[in-house]
Amino acid sequence: MPRISGGQRGSGVQAVVFALDTLEYIAQHQASVGVTELARAFGTTKSRMHRHLQTLMTAGYLMQEPHTERYRVSARLVALGQAVSEGFELARAARDVMRELRDKLGHAVVLSQSERDGVRIVTLIPSRSSIEIAVKPGSVLSFHASAQGKIALAFGEPELLDRTLAGELPMSTAYTIGDKTRLREEIELTRRRGWAAAPSEAMVGLNALAAPVFDALGRYTGAIAIVDSIQFIPENPTIEQVREIKEAAAQISRNLGFRVAPPVYAEQVAG
Image (tube, rainbow, N blue to C red; front, side, top):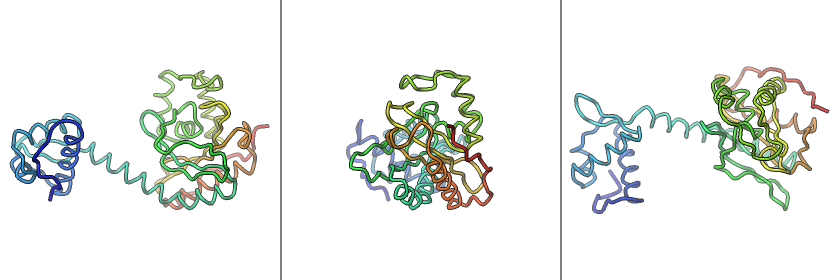
């Protein structure tokens, strides 16, 4: 049953809560629902319920069946739920591996997933240092100015790289790659070696080293990265750092059901 009685429903937060409860109600029924039934369930008028339903349709989260005029959840809402579910699955598969990597190398460890406008940090294992240098969970990093973003461009859908190269490449720092030819070369190098770094590209003095994670079907699903001062993750990461980040990524991939060995990337580190 709905958690609200529909007594006072105006704008702002109350309207948002009402919209979310409506979505939950329709989703739980797993079938189309009519305005009359919804109004009765929420103790409100049909006109008020109709306004909320139309708003949810405009946002793309509901669909109305043309013949019955009943409402059901849309493919967009289903896709959103699936994306959230996959995010939780990835975090679960990565948690122990991330903690082990932090304990081995000492750096903060972050997990990210791609979105349309960048890569979002899903979870973080803090470093053991008394001075914390990391990226906040929930933050969105640009594709071209972060190690995780370069991984997404190298191993994600080809359209992602095409779209990024077709747009502007804002300079976060003087070290950000703003030249499209150079960025393409960087992504090709990332594919060959299986890891990416971004020394001082998002913030001066900060570096990250990232590697790709694949799902059970071999599709790119996210990236694991270590983050620290460039003093501790140099522009040319150490052989140990590269080996450990790639092994951590491979272990998370195995935890997600990936059983085909990833391509053998060169272990050489520039310099």
